[in-house]
Length: 431
Image (cartoon, rainbow, N blue to C red; front, side, top):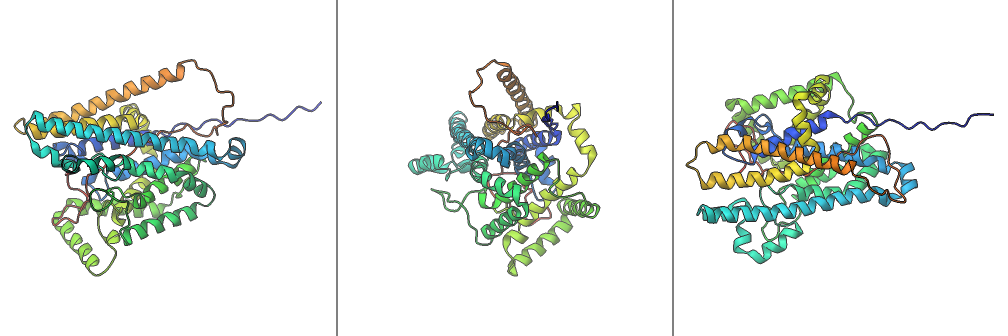
């Protein structure tokens, strides 16, 4: 009698430690940058290149989304569970980010209103775009839930929430025709920058600081990278010439940022190119429209890091364990860190006479974020070990990878402008 064929179940791939470690590192740098006036902000990534932790976090979030969700869009899974079973968790995540954003906006109002009263500093009511709330309350309260009125340091989640609404379509296209998806993304980015197309910013003029039509290009490239990583492949192959070209570009940008005389000259050349008629998002350093220099910098950085085996070893080491922990609890850590950073801003503005505050508060805040991550991880383990009744018809999931949560990204409250000094654009402290 012939034995029936056995079905082999593929093992889950080990969780890539680089995603969690770099996401945790980005959270630390974001927190430090969101407490302006402290000495540690001189050592975050924005001081050494055109991009900052927000761009890095967007790429990693796209990678995590591609790894977590693309398996549901495979043809066998769609036939078995239906398309809605693949779309539902992504849109559910988008809704979660929306709720968190509204909650953080409420906290921002409360923290700065309390600071204005407690320290008798009425100027706090006009910072981080709060003026409309206290001078034009009705329209501002309409704009907050509509995502058209956003506060500085609390303005990244809306863009990410919107992008997740369109992520299912991007995954469907990206799994079958990645070059087509890249072409569509580049075209959207170019058109948005060329004609300055953005979402409305009611009741203020202008548009969103993190324009989803532009920031989608970083997210989509990360998404496609995650899809390929889930398959055990690379989106961009390792090439010696490409590695050294990317590394050379990073070195050039570093010199640009750190040598004032050279920076002044190069900045002047970029300004002249813009005055000659080249699109501003190709020769400028604007953050809202993800200018080309910023985009190339973050992509070069990720490519170089992805080609170095020792980066993976360091990311998976015991030394990087706290960063990986914060990265796994990204949304919780970001949300908690945002509330703490806004509180520290108010405290430093209210007590400028305490010279030690800028030195003490950032380390305390990072330690508090780590504690929050520990508590979040413990809560997650408790939920996993608690007995529960399984659903009658549980959808079959692709076993190739462990879903990776992906929080939204914080960011600076306004775009970086071309500096008059030699310091590279985008390197100024957040205002």
